[in-house]
Length: 408
Ligand code: FAD
Image 1 (cartoon, rainbow, N blue to C red):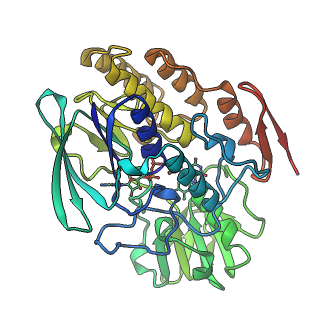
Image 2 (cartoon, protein in one colour):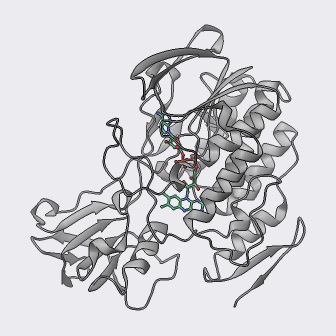
Image 3 (tube, rainbow, N blue to C red):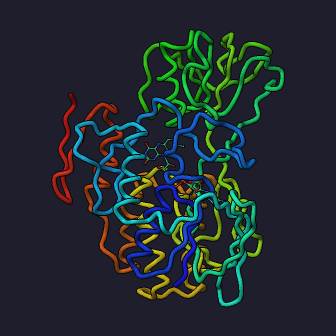
């Protein structure tokens, strides 16, 4: 089959490797000039030289929030290294090695921005892309399409009372690159997800004062010098008032408030809609039920993106190969049931793709449905276990069920 893959980040690379191994004829469209997606660091923010929004949200000093043992593709390990929580450059080297080892570059159309994806009769696809260097539009027809464009590139900034009155600096973590911009400043970081906790840790000792404002509990440790505060109720000219009535004078507000999932290139005819980060209708979070020769990879949240996204691609490849059969009606039936269950449990739409502790079960269902080998159980065990320990621990996977760890 002729397969188009959109995006040469981690998901696009593993989708390409598996598609090629299945004997498909593959083109990977990548709008930038290199592989790596979010893992590419650049000082640039805003628009690139072609006028496209900078995709990556990577910042200097980032350490992974998952151990590298949970950031591996099938049968391809990181070089021996005691540290489990690695830096951006180790991840990008790993991705470069993977690309070279499986000779993926020759399949990648770099500097090709996909502008539009339209379904054709017989569930084929017309891809319109722009060759950014030649400034030329191109159209090409494919039998199947795998969308791997990531979901952390359209910043979400909540509305807060008085926000417009603030006279200091404010921007989203998507545009944060290094701690120095806040040197000797008083900063309030909004949100305590991976970016909020990671960045407030990096700012401590550089900025004059760091506040982290969040609701719920802290999932990741932060230095004791970072002052914990509840949600911001009101923004004034040069201060913020928290919901407990306390106030802090600040020079900067950094929004680490997450991303909105968008697919600006998918035409209405693809039948894909996004409603508060719920991408629908996707069978098992992957296959477009309206046009099942399209897969969207990597929209599940709170899981291990590298192995899981590769597994999603393998599931889709098994489907288009005919290893398992599912009619659209059967997909709709299962899908509607799953949505009903989510509703009954009171899950908010924005969390419909959240896996968390369900990751293992989800992957086993994919494996059993598609008749492919299950992911090693140690991956799920380690994923659940590592949450409880600091990000300084080193892990070692011993066999498909067990791991050890060293706290020094
Ligand atoms: P991306 O990495 O986003 O790659 C998408 C690619 O698609 C990009 O190269 C982009 O240029 C290309 N593209 C987009 N639109 C188009 C278009 N129209 N035409 C052509 N090309 C296009 N995960 C972990 O496992 N561990 C971590 O520690 C971790 N830390 C993270 C820290 C930050 C700050 C962020 C933002 C994410 C982090 N993640 C982490 C999650 C991360 O998103 C995944 O690891 C991984 O990058 C997802 O890969 P992807 O290929 O799906 O998407």
